Image (cartoon, rainbow, N blue to C red; front, side, top):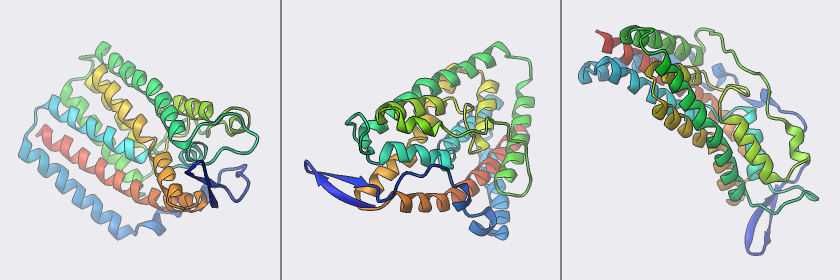
Length: 287
């Protein structure tokens, strides 16, 4: 990639044609990125931290459930970004407009459109899950809901850390790449954001999303659901934001992609540890 100056603005220029296919194989394996002893140590440390915080705080069941759901939302906002799908979005938002394409938007404007589209569909999804929880209030006693959530958090935390394999139902499709060649970049950014916002319309990168959605239903709060899904929607803009910063500092999009695919496994490991800590917090809160 090279850069040029146009009207005083530094703009990245791709030195190669856009890739026609995603390349998930460029991501290192979890075993290569983080050793087994390191991941095992994280499990133990996370359990001690999560259980210790609950023992000291001694939260009520409702407070404990809300706490772990907010934790799941925060880690989902971080972890749901680094798939090849997320990198595809970064390529649309942060990369320069291809010659001959309509429109004159800048990467920053496209990022704004992308965030708008994501929040516009993500927030209502979270609110709807909260409404479903309100309608089902009382179907499962609060201690049982907290205990079941904790069990699933442990299972999926170990899944993220590579120690067990859990089911991950999802629509295993990436975003429609052909739209890049048929629509203006800002419209593609907006549409991609709208498709990503609900979380389940495309590939689900992190299993923390399942804990978030289940937790919002268990809490039964539309306001909390909308707030957490908004947080996740804004978090999903992170790859594009970092790509813009990276290219404006003279870096290349291929270089950014390679670096983020390495970061991905670190983030996955962190996600697993956080879910284990949340599980320990939930169970100790039950005692």
